[in-house]
Amino acid sequence: MISKRVSYICDDNLINQCNRLPAVAGRASMVHKLIDSYGLTKSLKIVRPTFASYHDLRKFHSELYVDYLKSIKEIDDDYMANAEDEEHGIGYDCPPVSNMFDLVSTIAGASITAARCLVFGIADVAINWCGGWHHAQRFAADGFCYINDIVLAIETLQQKFHNILYIDLDIHHGNGVQDAYNLSKSVFTLSFHKYEPGFYPGTGGLDDIGLLSGKGYSCNFPLHAWYSDETIDYAFGQIFPDVFKKFKPDAIVVQCGADALAHDPQGGAKLTTHGYHSCLTKIIDMDKPVLVLGGGGYKFPNAARLWTSLTALLLGVSLDENIPEHDYWTQYGPDYTLVVEPMLTKDTNKKDYLDQCINIIKENLNYINIKPLEAPTLKEKKNDLESCDKKAQTDSIFKRFKSNLTKNQNNDMTQLDVYEFLE
Ligand SMILES: [Zn+2]
Image (cartoon, rainbow, N blue to C red; front, side):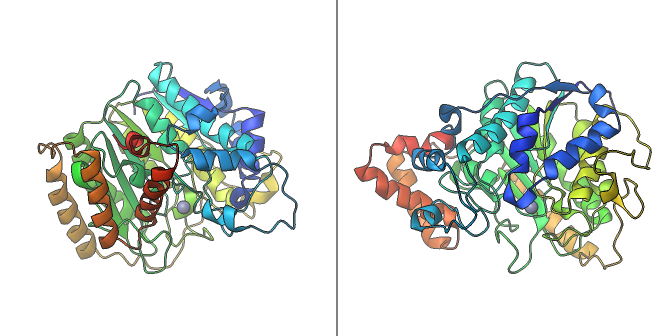
């Protein structure tokens, strides 16, 4: 692999704020300390993140949602979510957090800063392990994600780069990012994830390939439970080069959610660090600017193992398997090594199934570069969204579009405002 100039977005405030995310409380410190214990921070260009402003967040999120986040100040331990909270997705899996705006503007600001490192050409690769919150929707929090830092980073990248390829390696479908760009042909979303009945978020099937002018510019590889390094290596190796060749991205964003690792309590796959290494190596070898983000990962020592080893991979250095002594060393027992313990559970993905998926996906890639439909008028877009809504009643994004359109008729936002981020 060619050696790269790697920027690492980090400061104490980013770590402290990311530590406050309820689903991954304290994880950011563990990850950073492990990276630091290996001395990798000496080889990285450490970039201090800026805060995302209200205006920055509005480049994707709705005015109602950002205003709501801004209104959340002190939250007591016994706080009960009310109807307004639930309307904004705040409650069960996204509990309210004190001073919410500080949290979201820090995390979003870090991914925007990473994108700026690539836009300004000061790095070939920019890392924000505190980012990668791919489920957050324009109007609401969802699936542990309060702010969609990924979409905001992609919007920043598009100041310089036209075609952006988004790759999602988290065990969950990257629904929030795909929803944002379902109609777009300048952002291609490619997600590999577990797709089983009842598994969150329930979207990301083979036929979920984008809509209207964006048809063919979303690609999902739905995998069965317990997918292994061999499976992801085969699936990714068959699909990624074709997507790259056809779509011709100018920059790549990769979400490296660590919850597809073996033993993750929210997961159900059995990857080790090798599966992720193999995908990231193929991405980096394409020699395009790459934004690298974190995401899920609920067995914290394993998330730290993965992201430390990926940081080393990007720097082109190899690490001693034995973890150096540091503040969190005791949490890496009983072996105190970088190795993610493999699982004996059988991978339920048969080669026949993978080949069937690969054939269908390759067929769908033929939509790329076909002259797109004429850009629809706003009225046509509204009608199309309403007819899509009927077909996809379980897809919450359409319901939200529709409710927002209804709200807009009496509100100060114009219909154009609803669509501006989709163009
Ligand atoms: Zn996940």
